[in-house]
Image (cartoon, rainbow, N blue to C red; front, side, top):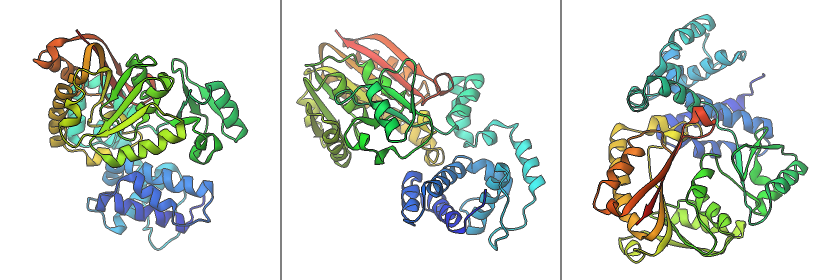
Length: 403
């Protein structure tokens, strides 16, 4: 592989923004890809994937390069040099690249690869929490899987097409996909591609959504005609899935504390042809109280550590702090206590997270069921989706029924 100066400079600038300025990796990549309109698909792929790779392996590479944060520009070039050596890419004779001891880098890599926190490039505290909650054996497998690049998975919008027709149309647009056993509406891309430019996307035939995430709406057991509330809807991937499962019949109320996210959801809903959805901003306790005992189904896709989705958000490993984890558990319990009151008698509730930690998952459900608000609910079932078993994101979902 021949390295091009302008592409590598874009990578270095982006890494500086992510590591030193706190910019989110996806935003930094977005900005980088707008730098030069002349870049082709291969150039853009190199920039995006190299940024994500170095972000993912930051701790390991920094240890090998013997650099510490905040990184100077020269430090970032050293990280890039480590990435090149470990990838077998010949380093160019540029001023920015120092003489690089290739054998020392490979030797250091072999040595550090024996220690999990370096091999998997994670902070000490995340390694300790994962091992404590999942056990050494399971955590070792899980964190290895969570460090792999996430595949691109599509969810067919069954309001507008079928999985078979979507696959055929995408093939005509030059994108090959395959079915995934056990996932009704999912298609997996054979090779990464920018699917957002396709006519199929513009026509609302699919959404990009991980296979594990696609299990959540199905788990809520909805039927056309029901009144369903998605309480932490965000930009609405699961809301849109619910709408297609309900065949656009009945009512979905998508709620969130962020109005900006709900505005994005409205745009997506229009493209998807969803018209059984209303949005409500949770700006006080009033919108929730008005819906007490009104819903057939309530989805609580709770805020969480996001440890199950670090394959697609590798920078979250470095942004996450122990105190955030403690605080988010309190929020999860508060949300369960409050939002569960919207379920009517005989109705069902799903509590879900994109975390693999039992303290955010099973333990929250047990605590809720033992509380005053939870005594009206019966536990029906739960599903623990671990990445190393499924090959997709880590998720949790629990189904409860109101007496």
